Amino acid sequence: MGPSGEKASALCRALEQAGIACESEYRNGHNILGGGHSRFGTIGAMESAGIHYVYVKRKDRDAAEEVARQVLR
Image (cartoon, rainbow, N blue to C red; front, side, top):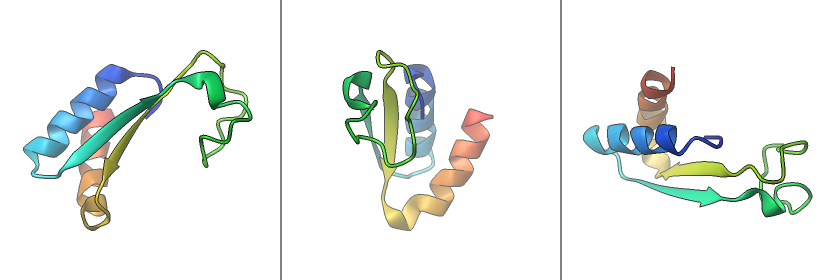
C-alpha cells in the first residue's frame, strides 16, 4: 500500500462494506533496506518510510482487487 495510512484505512473500510474480511499492518522502514521485510523490491526506499500492508483471504483476493482498483484510483 505504501506509506499512506489514509489510503489503507479507506481500503479496509471499503473491503468491510463489501463483506470482505481484512487485516492491516504497518511496518516502519528500519528494516526495509537490507532487512528483507519486503519480497517486492523496496530497495532504495527511504529508511524512515514505512509500508502499510492489507491482507485478505485467498478466496477473496479477486473481489478485493476489484474493490482496491475502485478505492485507490
